Amino acid sequence: MRRLILTPIAGAIAAPASASLVYDSNVQLSAQGFGNAPRDLTVQAHGSADSESGCVGVGAGGGITFGSCVTNAQVHDSNGLANVGGDEPSPRADDQKYGIPTVSELGWASAADIGILFNATEPQNDTGGINVQDLTLKFYDALTGNLLAAIDGSHDFASTNAGNGVAGFTFVVDGAEQSYLNALIFNGSNLSNIRIALEATLDRVGGGPDTFRAVNLQRTLSVPEPATWGLMMLGFAAVGIVIRRRRRGGTLMQIA
Image 1 (cartoon, one colour):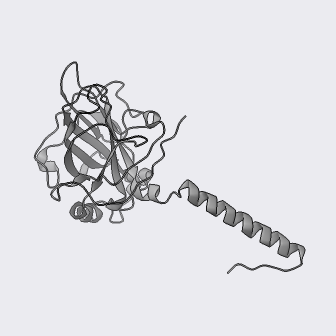
Image 2 (cartoon, one colour):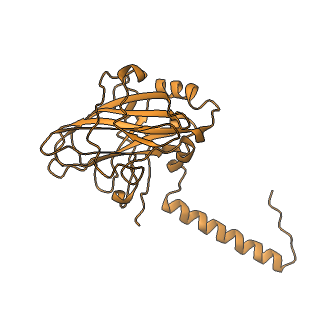
Image 3 (cartoon, rainbow, N blue to C red):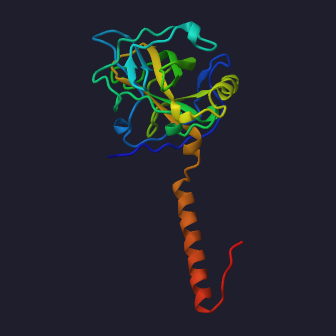
């Protein structure tokens, strides 16, 4: 199976400051075989419709639910658009098309780790725009299915073509909402008991399916580039040669 390779490049956020989830054009996640990577939300318009909406939620006991759209009142600093759902293609299960991972499974230790990767599959609209009218990230108590927090954002894309070798478009959490989530979610709680789920509404769609995946930005930043790996391996080899030579000469090498 081909693997998704994530390589973020930090930069300024290219989105209105009032949004909670904002598209950052300078975070570019490169990919090989993104089509084989699991998603957390998939939406696809019916027939010739040019809009689509999908909602995934968490039920009591940690099971996945569909059509579980939240209201604007349940979203912190809502952008005013409520999703309706109904465009979640089959099979509807916690598998490749959908997911409700725990915060600990994602390795999120703070809101700065949060990234939502949007991948648009629009063969009839590849050079045209697509409007993500709403993208909502939700946090649930996995035992009870109770909603703990929700934030949203939006972005009108000029093109669905992310570029050669780029997995898609990355949404991050803005500063004000990071503080909100850090105080509410990342405050010493048992993160293995908190699951996330996504919902979204898009228009000007021309094909699909369009997908979203939660990623850990800090974890991917910690992965060395191939050139760095090469230098590290050369360094390890050099240290090994020195140790062997010193052992043969009867000298004990101590590493502080």
